Every structure is written in structure tokens, then in C-alpha cells.
Image (tube, rainbow, N blue to C red):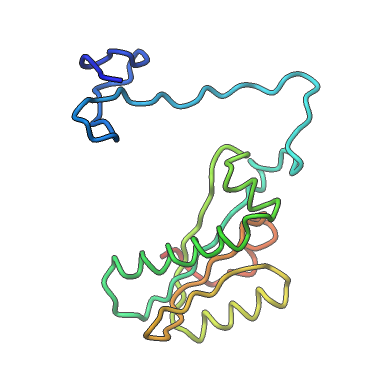
Length: 167
């Protein structure tokens, strides 16, 4: 679909067109966000309830701070850990709700671990409490660099991360 310029075929206030992803030189209007529909009266809620605002599903990502790697390489480590969690937890009800944005947004908290020993200690603590996670080891260096929890209620995980500061 070709666009005749700003506002053509676009919702009011959508702004200028963007290049067409098909690469044919045509432009397409920006997509308007889907309208949020209020639940019908008496409609069933999410199987996870309406806990979102008070106790949201959160994915915690913890990166080692002692690695003297470029910023982009550290971001890649977080991405690897999160992608691994998304794949491994793809059938977990809480992960599905998180990734589907059932509660309106995906809340992610990125923290820093002083070193590999503290990251390993956190992994042991999470395992002992039954909190699923993925510990990412970069290859071929064989360096443990990041940990990402499966999406869980903030109240179930936050206290286990006491002492870790935002990255």
C-alpha cells in the first residue's frame, strides 16, 4: 500500500510516514497502537488474576560488573540470557502472560553483580528457593556473564536479590 504523504491512510495524529518494510520505495503510515478494550462485564479475568499493578510479573537480569568488556558486549550477554529464558519458559503460564503483556507491560529489572562468585551465589539462592532462571556462560571464553530469572511475581523474587544494585 503506498502512502501519499503525511497523514494519508494513517490515524489522525499518527505523524509522518516511515519507509516501507517491503523495500519497494513506497512508504507506509505508522501503525496506531491497538485500542485497549475494557473487559466485558462479567468476563473472566486472566488466569493470573489482577495482581499486575500491586505485584507485577518481573524478569530480573543480573550482569557481572567486573568484566571489562565493551558496553555492547555486556548488553549482548543480557540479551542472550533473556532470549534463553524466553525459549525455555515458552510454555510456563507466568512467562506466557509476561511475554503476552497480559498485565499491560513487561517489567524487567537489570541489576549488577560485583563478580562471578556473587552471581554463582545468587544462582544457588534462587535454586534453593525454587525460582527458575538461566545462567548464561559466554563461549568460547567459558565466562559466566549473566543470569535472567523466569518471569515471576515481584514479591516472590525481589527479596532474594537484596544487596544487588541497578546496573
